[in-house]
Amino acid sequence: MHPFLNIAVKAARRAATVINRASTQLELLTVESKSPNDFVTEVDRAAEKAIIDVLRDAYPGHGILAEESGESGADSEFVWIIDPLDGTTNFIHGFPQYAVSIAVTKNGVLEHGVIYDPISNELYTASRGGGAYLNDRRLRVSRRLRLAESLIGTGFPFRQFDNIDAYLAMFREVAQKTAGIRRPGAASLDLAYVAAGRLDGFWEMGLAPWDMAAGVLMIQEAGGLVSDLAGESNFMATGNLVAGTPKVFAQLLPIIQSYRTDRLQS
Image 1 (tube, rainbow, N blue to C red):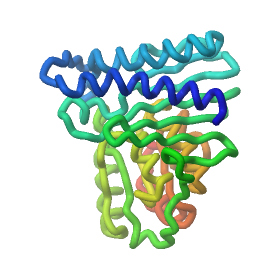
Image 2: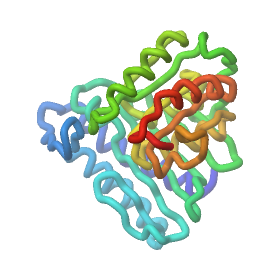
Image 3: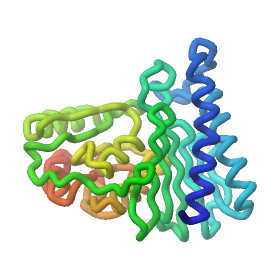
């Protein structure tokens, strides 16, 4: 395992210790609202600090882009992209679908990623050119060929509702042309599930880099495809993403594209 990946795993497990401890005392949590339906707790902040402490100790010169504390050293060769608790709303409610997501880029290119589910103890890892793994098992996207037989993941808007009508139109058509849609509420895990073959495809708009970074690399290294709404690779900047097995991706993308609005470019 690459040293960067080792450090990322160590940091993710350190954060998970914080999260697991707090999960037994949810009634004591202090919850703040960053914006409507977008919550942060002291657990998010403590988990993020635990991750950054590990990274700073190992690589003090690297840049960091983190959900709660923002960005530092963005012009560094290496930048770590961190979501200390993806699925905070789920966590607050005791809904067991949340994860720690950590990725590192080299000159803007995704190099390594870790997604850790502290409830199931599932550790997803990926390195550019080195494949994707769940614990010690090599991951491949599913062999599903037809959209009609596919299970598709998504995430609905929860911060901004300007695009809700476009989303619902997408949902309506995808629901009619697939075996089903799932919306568990933690994008990093949704992407990891595509890499693991549990979902055959996924789409969402309005994601942040820390929601996507590690999961995108997982899918690519597991043989899947990822793009923005234009079919290009600008998803980290636009926050709009479509992913899936090669065959399912090719059938899902045109449906999502057909509902593009001026607000949902790329």
